[in-house]
Image (cartoon, rainbow, N blue to C red; front, side):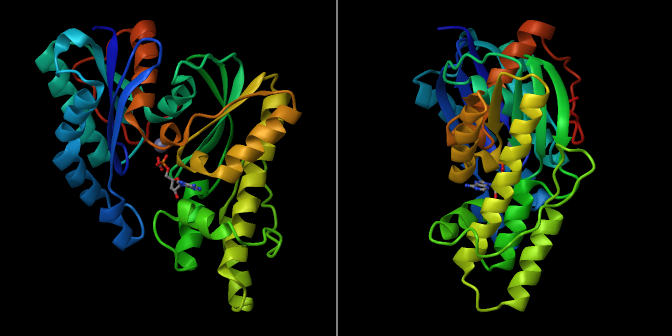
Length: 333
Ligand code: KG4
Ligand code: ZN
């Protein structure tokens, strides 16, 4: 078999590798999470992340081949794709070094991928055919932005967070409420039997109409709980979740409609949030937009999205140079 891409992702706290074929079919996607390592610290500790990536990267790659039922061999691969940025410097370097070594050893091309472009290409996994232009909400622990994708590879950032990323705000509020790390799934779990209208959380004003700000809403939750210590945590979690989701959905749809998009997409770790997925689907449909919402494992960091973007970059621009580095502050556009 040939035509496969190996995608490697180590930009944050997930060591991931996947094999994806030319039509976007995911043959295997292995994700070694470092949650257990970082949870005691309430956030990602960069040095520990790099070390954990080093310890597991080759095993994760090996497993990707085993699950696909293949022997690691050059003949099956069109290229090795790897996240080159943005992300934690030391963490990125582990993935880039491993990808370079594997590509060199197998004699196949190396392709560097922007992590954010990877999130956008997650929409096309599992043989989904996207009709452009679309507006994609990329929402994770490190990023919150609405990107207009005119066509594959042509990006315009329509809005961005001015302070905390949405996932970061979930993590901080969860920590304040004494919930575990990462906070997003914890807030979602606790919110399930809470009243989303219990706490009124003011909308943050932003100069750019499609920008976001989550630091103010987070502070107003903290202040409310301090003033009302007997409030149920489930009510606080439900109210916070609902306020973040509503603003994300509203601005993504408004940005899509205003810029002539025919669809909207969702990607990034917060894209695993059920309320966000449902509201985007519902309100997108109501606005006459096609919705592209990858399954949850393809929203959080993974190797398949890197392979998916890597295929496009390889075909459009050719392989990356052998002196490719890690670029912690890489921008999308
Ligand atoms: O994309 P990701 O896996 O890693 C990066 O930050 O790049 O996203 C992780 C973020 C964390 O902040 C986590 O709390 C959030 O995604 N998250 C969620 C959910 N699952 C993960 N936020 C809300 N609801 C969820 N179900
Ligand atoms: Zn990510």
